[in-house]
Each structure stands twice: as C-alpha cells, then as structure tokens.
Length: 159
Ligand code: SF4
Image 1 (cartoon, protein in one colour):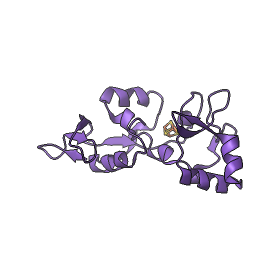
Image 2 (cartoon, protein in one colour; image 1 turned 30 degrees about the vertical axis):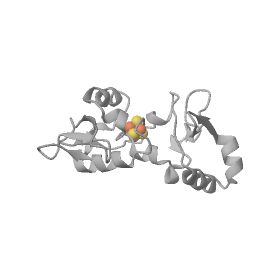
Image 3 (cartoon, protein in one colour; image 1 turned 90 degrees about the vertical axis):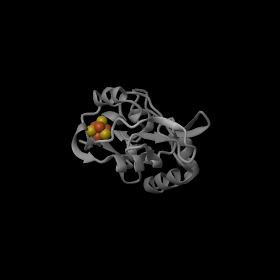
C-alpha cells in the first residue's frame, strides 16, 4: 500500500496501482486517546457495523441479535449503523460517567479513529479533526508503516 521511489511517498489503492493520496505523514503522527468522548457525542455520524460486530455487541448487551438490531441499529447507504440519540450522541455513549457501553467490543471504525482514509487524505483534514479531538497531535508516535497497516484495515475507503 505504501510505495514510491523513496519507499514512503504515496499510498495506492490496494492491488490497483492507482494513487489514492500523497503520503504527507511519512514521518508518522502523534496520537493518544484522552478518553474525552468528543468523537462519540454531539454530532450525528455513522458508526458502521459488520454482521460479526453486531453479533458481538448484541452478546455484550445480553440481547438477541434481532432485538438489538431493531433497537439500536438503522441503515444508511445500504449499510448498518448504530443509531444516535436526539442530541446527536452515539446511542452507546453514556454522558453520565462519560463512557461507551460497548467499549470492549466497539466497532472497528471506532478502534481505527483517527486513522481513517478521510482524516489522513490531507494534512488540512488532519488539522481540522485535531480541533475536535485533543488526542491528535500529542502522545504516542505512530510510524507511517503502522498507520498504513491501519488504513488497510479500514472497512470502507469513504470512512
Ligand atoms: S475525541 Fe479524541 S481524545 Fe477524545 S475520546 Fe475521541 S479519540 Fe479520544
């Protein structure tokens, strides 16, 4: 996925040779989650679920899969996503205690943040998201190879 004459200059769509975007983060990036919950609340946003993730979350909540889907899941663009509360919070986020109810089995999308294709596409996009996420730009150093491996795990390129 990471390629270029210097070995680290651009990212291509897996197996196609098609350039996806310039690798502006070849020196790596800083990020450590501070657990503030800002990415889970306040603004609507899709949290995509694979069938396996839906099974695991239902089991974590002690619910039958069908009841879990009917209660907490909706569909957008032909994909399953967790619902939101009226205030935009993820339905699994509890303001009291500032915690995710399903943290141990949270979807891959949540685990990969902020190393999403849409966030990494440009430095400006990374900076924009940093305004909302205090964990970005500080903490652990993530080398480019590790970031590229996380990008490969992204369930969707439009994430
Ligand atoms: S906004 Fe950033 S620091 Fe806060 S919980 Fe989300 S990922 Fe962690």
